[in-house]
Amino acid sequence: MNKSFIKFSNQAKQCHCGNRHYELTIDRVEIKKGALEDAVSYVISKQLHHVVIVADEITYKVAGEKLQSLLEAGTIHSTVSIVRVDDQNDVVANETSIGQVLLEVPKQTDVLLAVGSGTIHDITRMVSYKMDKPFISVPTAPSVDGFNSMGAPVVINGVKTTFQTHAPIAVFADMNILVQAPRDMIAAGFGDVLGKVTSLVDWRFGHIIGDEPFCPLVYRMTEDALHTCINNVERISTLTEEGIKILMEALINSGLAMLLFGRSHPASGAEHHLSHYWEMELLRTNRKQILHGAKVGVSTQIIADLYKEFVFAIVDYAKGNKESTNQSLKNKVLENEVEITNLIGQMIDSHQVKEMIDLVGGKTTYEELAIEQPLLEESVKEAHNLRERFTLLYIYNKYVRS
Ligand SMILES: [Zn+2]
Image 1 (cartoon, protein in one colour):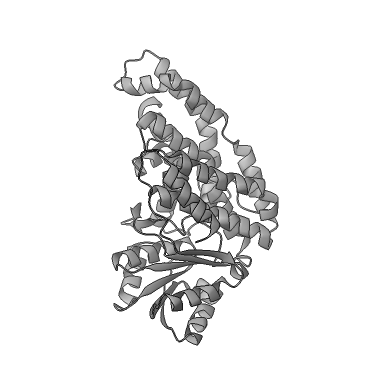
Image 2: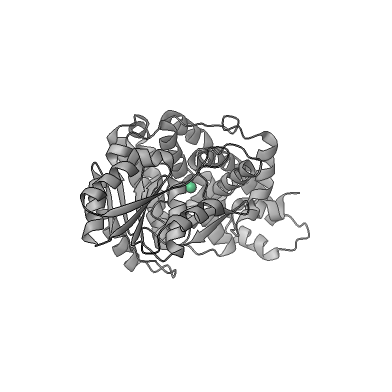
């Protein structure tokens, strides 16, 4: 286990927030040059004889091929499942891809290796869980924060749903590969981390208003990951080994926070709901997909701006004597008015988020992502229905908006 794992595990034992803390069952995390070789020696040491590499065409070339020859040299037999792209040339974590991999993985398999970005991980996570087999994470780009969590967000019947499945038994992130990841994928990973600007606000708000489960330790872990990236934005933007490593560690630590908590609350709020809404619409209308973190980097700015207005509208609503069906909500807002307004007052400004994403080389506006104004407006009014969460967007849309 690496140092931060041991630290977090020990802290979790001391935490008395009343929530269950899941055990950090990940055996090993390596973020370094030559981690692919480590992955192979790990497989050998664990006597995992039948290995399946799950990848897409690109990530197979980037890492899968080498991994397979290294396994071969270690006399480990492996088969490969290359996830097919859809009509738009996108790899999508949907029932088709899950079905394909499920059919291609032999029954006697000992372990699955997810070799790729977030989507490949979600497909592998789902299939390995359903087959009751372990999986190992081999990220090929620092593009998303869910590599090592339990949640598998997949699209079923056009609806993005997150299933709690299982975490990988180990993560091997080879810096030789990560530094060569395309800039837009690196910017996407950075955008996914910046999503914590609003997701943490929503989590705290949901706890105050909706009694959502909350853990101060997990909150701090996620906040640390966010601040580390913010403090190192220059380094990350140069795409040097040092910067990429900082970003990857932040992504892994954010995933770890979710894993410890057993839910995605810390890392996913209304900004993710907006992003999911857009993704579903693009799929429905047969359009090219946009990287998850690129969407989140933009939706975070939109939500941050809206929340600055909404919070006052919510407080006004609570203070108003308009006949309401939800007096207890009004009371909760009034009792916690200072904390709620401070939460929004202390939130990082959308302009700063924009500047940082720009510096790292990501797209910064919904227009650049080719999200149309009507879709944006619709998502702001509807996206809260995607999840049962007491986000500020949910409370505003359900009770305050007239
Ligand atoms: Zn995310």
